[in-house]
Image 1 (cartoon, rainbow, N blue to C red):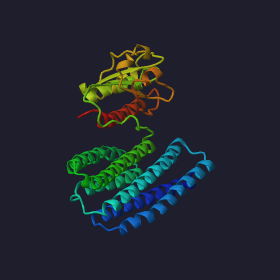
Image 2: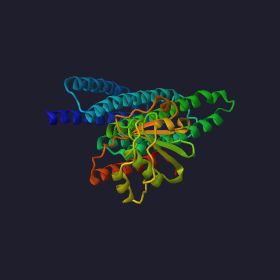
Image 3: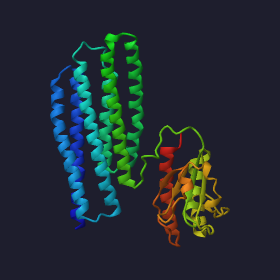
Image 4: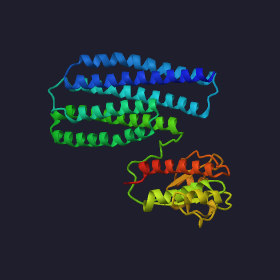
Length: 355
C-alpha cells in the first residue's frame, strides 16, 4: 500500500515537471516573438495556455482525489500541499507569459523604441530560476532552493534599470509614451514571474524540510545584530545546546539565548557532548520564557512540537521550528541531537546572517 502511494506521488511530481516545461517553452516563445518581431510565436503561447490550464486543473483534481483516498504521513502531506501550491504558481506564471504576449503584440505594431537588451536578460534569468526551482523540488535540494530565492534580486535590479532607462525615453515625448509603457508592462510581468518562481522554491523548502519560510526569509535583512531565542519545555538539553552552538558558529553577529516554559536544570549529558566540540555550557542556567525581553527578539526557534511560543513573542519575532527529537539518556543520543543542531544553525547562518 505504501509503495503504491509513493508511486502516485511520484506521478504527481512528474506532472509538475511537465507543466513547468510547458510554461518555460511559452516564455521562450514569447521572447522570440518580441525580439524577432514575429507574431506567430504569440499564437503558439495562446494555444499552449489552453494545455497549461488543463494541466493545472488535472493536477488539482488528482491531488484532491489522492488526499481523499489516503491518510498521508506528515512528510507525504507536506509534499501534497507543496504540489498543490506549486501547481498554482506555475499557472500564475503562465498567465504572466500571456500578458507579455499581449503587450508585445501591441508594441510591435509600431517601430521599435530601442534595442532590447535587458528584457531578454530578465527572461533568461526567470527561465533559469524556474528550471532550477523545479529541479530542486524534484531532487529535494534545499540549498538550491535558497539559491533560487536569492536570484530574485537580479531580476528586481534589471527591472529597476529598465524603468529608469524607459523613463528617459519618455522624457516629455508623447509619441514614445505608448511604446515605453508596453515595455514597462512586459518588464513588470517578468518581475512578477520571478516572484512566483521564488514562491515555488519556498514551497519546495516546505516539502523538503517542513519549514515554512514564506514570511520568514528576508534577503534584505538590515545589517544588525540578530537576537535568536531557542525554546524547549525544560530548557535543559536541546535549547541549551543550541544556544552554545549558535554562539560558537554565528559569533558576535547573533545574540543567542534560550529559555523554557517549565525550566529545570542543564542536563549533564548535554554538558559532556558539548565539551567534545569545544563548547562549555556547564555554567548555563535554565531560564523561564517569562524572563525574556520579548521586544528585542528577532527569531524564536522552537525545538519540540510540545513547545508553543507565547503569543507575545510571535507578535514581534519571526517563528522557526526545528524538529529535533528529545535525546535519550545516552551519549550517542545527545551527540546525534548536537549534530542535528549544528546542521540547522549552519543553514540558519547561510540564510539569515549577513556576511
